[in-house]
Image (tube, rainbow, N blue to C red; front, side, top):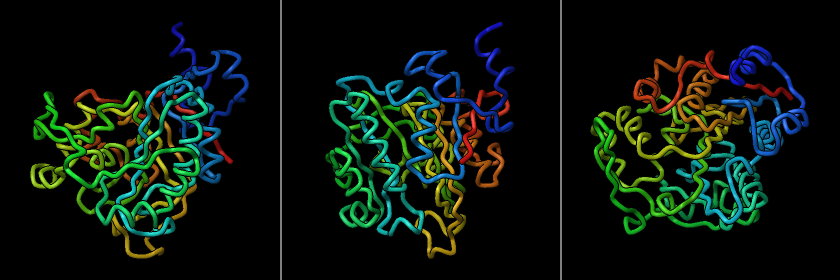
Length: 303
């Protein structure tokens, strides 16, 4: 029996069955930095403690970051609002990710976003700048066209080219950290939608089949790891939100190197069928990742 089939049979589908493991057993069976799981989902804890256990179940950050590598951590920092409105990624989670990258041996860890509101205010009032700096990251802006380089999206249908932030093009490791939330145009903001924060001309995307452009770009840039913040989830009036009444506290986290699987699981958590979100379906059909969660080896952690 193949190892993958063995785990599917012996451990179950994780997210669906709630199967549990001891994390020491993962390390002893497979060695540090190795995990049998396609996706890990945590629920019921605080952002940092959920991340700590989930990344350990994925084999630890050393499975994704090696000594001396240049790492980019890309949260959603798009909006000049406080964390309680859930428009941006949880700052405590960002700080924890930075610390783990540095502990794994990263030479430098950079944090940035091409924000929608004033970038200085977004970085400060989201709490992300302070959390990232305190953890040892370097904060850089994404607010000027000079930071972006033109690239070809050879497999794109609607998006044939775009301009990508130089840090992404120069990095060894790209960690994508979206916040799960409602979006008026894209239906949901999750991992693939968060990649719009690493490009310059987003207007073109909105005017030329947004969902297909999102899927197209993922053929060019697939993050090393996707960590979905679903601690506070904006259920309506996204992407900026209006009030705390738009927010539901779900206390959840999803981690996967498969960007389509991460978004599919997040959609289910939000209450949407993944195949009903056009960009998730298009990305799956393009072979970018896997939408069918029942075919993945998924582990769920409950607090």
